[in-house]
Picture 1 (cartoon, rainbow, N blue to C red):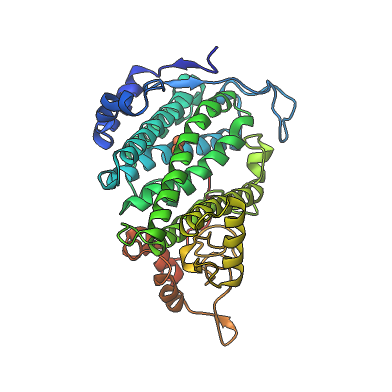
Picture 2: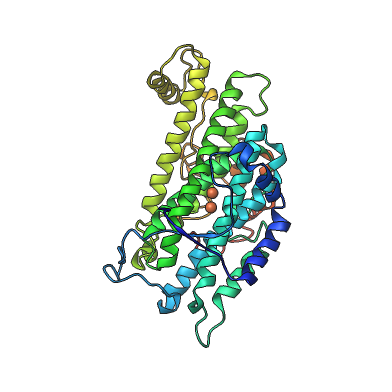
Length: 420
Ligand SMILES: [Fe+2]
Ligand SMILES: [Fe+2]
């Protein structure tokens, strides 16, 4: 028995999303024509909503724990109604935004396998966008009597979003080379996995039922990212003619991880989502679990690098070498610190979150850069960042926003809560 049933959305919204696809993702046809060549054992892609099962009928967390879950958005009152809408909107924005990003560098894929994987990721993100549309579309109570049509307005807004308009910063950064596709699938899709995992408990039932099928698709995105990252790192460390160096990869990691860390929202917050029974963990807990997993992923990449460089070394021995090289900063059996990747500290290059770390000049190791006992100036920090971030990224308009805020020319917008 399938783990889910399927549904289509109202033809009006279905067609609107198809028109969006033709404009933003015309390569979908190519993927569908070539699907069986690459994914013979898997059911061909189809655009519909997948409705999974709830793992419990009742609300599990927060103020309403023990009560039945909400089937109708209209039964949620006040802030709860709009908070649920904000999460659905943020979720859908990530799905559509990532398609726009992946497409920019699709043709740079080093192999057909990598190109097909990115196309499949894009198709599945389109289905996730469709899924969020289903949540808004099938439940007519999003339109409350005497209020604006929240579902319609949200879908219209989502379909009009271009890079730069998306809810979360990570989805406004244009990809410039294929490392972006790979590191993004490794680090940013992993945030997605945490969000979906947490939202299985969602007190609004249609959202909770959407999570299981989406999670199984995310497995492919994250797995592809990790596999390709390992391959690119191994070739960087062992092949003089490799397209990307370890330094290129490290700079790309330094640019994406802080945006991933911020997607959890302020690390001291998240209590409202817990109180409404939308999630099962607060922001800080989820963020630190995420960060530990990122470190583990990069350590496994390093293990593969060491095994490629040192003859006949077992995985556990390779791991010891990785740790020793990174702890001591010395070269061991031909492995240099510069051959290995690491996760920048969570305080590095932050624009959102706790006030005591945002826009503060922390280095990649989490050390505050100081001069005469005081944090270095914004200008000095920009010089430091130029040494650890991709130069193309520092020319981008998303980075310009950070620079302006750092230099105090434009204060970061307070108020509106940030995060997913
Ligand atoms: Fe997704
Ligand atoms: Fe994904």
